[in-house]
Amino acid sequence: MREGDEGVGAAAAAAAEAVRQDLPPLFAEVVARVLMRVGRLPRQPHPSGEITNITKRKRQLHLPAWLPPSRLVGGFFVVRPIGSGGGGSVFVARRSEERHEEGAEIFALKVPAYTGAAAHTLSEEEFMQLFREEAGALLTLPRHSNIAGFVTFDAGARPKPILVMELVEGNTLERLVDRRALTIRQVIDVLDGMAAGLQAMHDAGLAHLDVKPANVILRTQRDLASPRRSRGEARQSPVLVDFGLAGRKVRPGCGSPYYGAPEVWELSAFGDRVDPRATDVYAFSCLAFELLTGQPLFAGETLPAIFAAHLSHDGNPPGLEWMRKHDRHGPLAELLSAGLAREPSKRLGIGAMRARLLDIAKERLSESTWPLRP
Image (cartoon, rainbow, N blue to C red; front, top):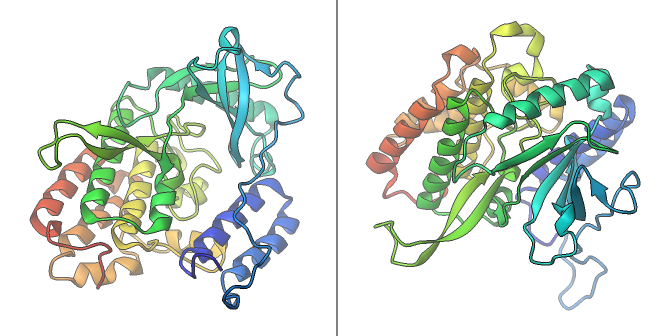
């Protein structure tokens, strides 16, 4: 009602996904169907001047009941909650010895959640073992300007195990997309930075496994060197965050509906041949299309419909057809198609995708306006 029709369907699908993570299947299905219908309801503006009780309120986040009164977990002091989802809860935290120092360094502390969705495939013991294995893999995470820095993990912390990362401050890419305040140059810069971060992870043998706009934060910084901008102009550098699902293998439940590769939804059909880095490439290709066009590549009125869309193509989803036939954007469609192959081993690597995307942008997108359209 406040911001028009665009994005309502996507927001409803995201809410439905969250519900499915936390409720028993039958209840989740009922609630999810209602949520999906919300996006199709007619909206009527209120008469001019009418005061309504619809206000923009920030979601009130509370400290969880399991947190000790001291707020200490594994050597860190929890300052405040940031958010929570299917993968766990995230908090702003300081080192325990610096908890009373307002200027002390702050971190993002994540506590994994053993949800109903995980319970369908894993026991709690197996879930925690996976957490220990995958969190341990983050010890090899390289330092890179497009990757949130890894600080530590403590699988034995009480009352909950924790994963601690650099706290990156700024707006999420999701918020920038929702505002629809983009240019082609901004999109190419963001995609290039994301690909650079993923490439560094992939070179270390790690995959992010939950690439989506909400997991990219745009950190504002002064750019004093770039010849494409006036001296001292502020630019936004994309930083990959939330490594709660990162690791060396694809696991049940990793990924998100609009960006999840076929192997995420049908892992048993692919067996042990899945390279998780290819799963990132698929998600990156979906996100690239969305950033360039302002529309998701895969859509549906229900989550099963979205999953089916991922499973029913082999690199040539219907959403790419207009781009493939476009005089200027055909090579871009071919590139995205190379990252969307059903078989993970046939997908282009992220380094090759990054290089080719920059070439295409230079040759064919420099005069284009956002969003790309048929």
